[in-house]
Amino acid sequence: MNEKLLTKFILSFLIEKQDYLSLTQEQQTIVFETCKTIMTAIYNAIKYDNVFPVIMCGDVEAFKVIEKSIKQVADFLPSVEKIKIHLIH
Image (tube, rainbow, N blue to C red; front, side, top):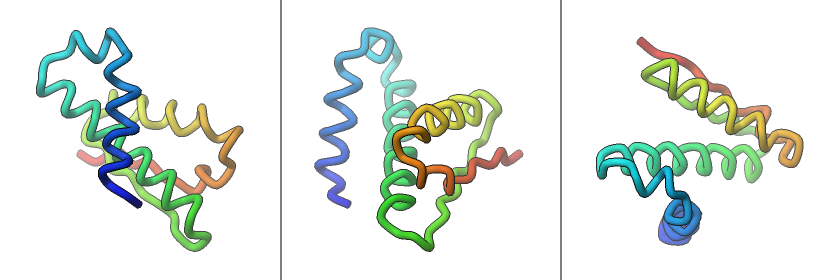
């Protein structure tokens, strides 16, 4: 996966969202990194048949957001059902 292309893709999407622009720099970084993690997991789930990506979340809110994001694309990308999301304490 081309990291520069992925970064450009994510940022081009995020900078059009007013909610994202109203966040602090730290919050924007968290949102960007979360998007990058989700996109990388989706890429790996699609590209490799024997890969089952695992996303670890440190809090319930992040878990719910990531779970919702994955479920929304599952109809279009059935292989994302291989992605597992776990809450760690």
